[in-house]
Structures are given as C-alpha cells and as structure tokens.
Length: 156
Image (cartoon, rainbow, N blue to C red; front, top):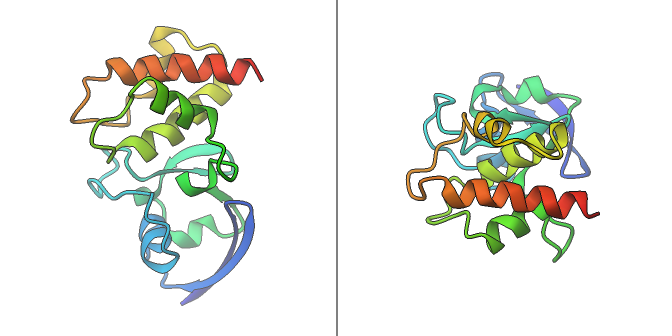
C-alpha cells in the first residue's frame, strides 16, 4: 500500500492505495465518485476522462499513485454548486447527450479543448473529440454543444 495525497475537486485528500490500482477505480470504488465511467479499460472510449493538473487524461491509463501530488478534477467538480459549468450547460441546451454514458468524459475533454482553443475551428473540435466515443448521437449535437460552450465561455 502507498500513501497518496492529491487535491480532488478542490479539496485535499489523502488515501492508502494498492500500487496497481487504476485512478478510475480509485475514484469510483474508493471515493464513490461514480461520474467517471469505465467504458473499455483500454483508453479507447474516453468515458473515464478526468483533469490532472488541468489536462484531460484518461483515468483508466493512470495508476492512482501517479496522481500523487496532483490536482485532480472529476465531472463532480465541474459545476459550482447548482450552477453548471458552461460545457455542461451547453451539452444540456444543445442535446449533446443521449444515453449519457459518454457525457462526463466528453465534458472533461471539451473543457480541456476549450482551455487550449477558446474559439475552436471545426477541425480542432473534431480532433479534440477523437479520443471520446459516443455510440448514440452521431456527434452532430456534440459538436453543436462544443460551439455553444465556446460562446458561453467567451462571454464570461
């Protein structure tokens, strides 16, 4: 067992974890943060995407011990109380979800994309979504949601 410390959704956390524990399993099973989904365990789908030190990372590819000392944000940490993050708001407004399974990972990937490209081109949006799979929507409303989120974030 290894002792790790991190800032998780703005709060300091300390825990003991087995060295082989994946970050996604630590978040879900040990901390009860089930918004981070396990879709494939092979980093193909993006459902497990979280932010590590502000960057979108697939948490099924990272050991919990590798997040020691990091600032980790999950989907549960995106909203501010009852106020949705602009990306969450845009996904709701533009119907960028259907079953919702991929949505947390999409929101995390899109918020990182918009941090890097506040006014993304269509190519930047498509490239930014490459690592996140949706089996329901066909991506039209997801792309529309990204564009709306950019508008909302740029209006701040």
